[in-house]
Image (cartoon, rainbow, N blue to C red; front, top):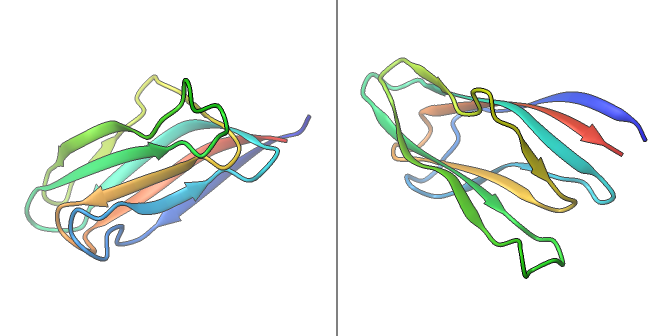
Length: 116
């Protein structure tokens, strides 16, 4: 099993306010550990952000779509580290999504480790 560290970034997260957009999809035959997720507000005023895990695994008894952060406020020109001290394990085909209350003003930087 190989462990590969990666950085995934997305500028201007939501093209439409409050619409979840895909930040990362776990490849098939892969398990991913989320190490860090930083959200940066490029707007002069505060925006709200939501981070969601869409579970596409076949184990539907225990896995469903969930918000891991909902309407967290990111101050104007500020940033928030969403994973402080926490880790999330994503299974093959799971999707991490992010939305913003203001279109195009939130950047996301995701640090992960893929296990293949």
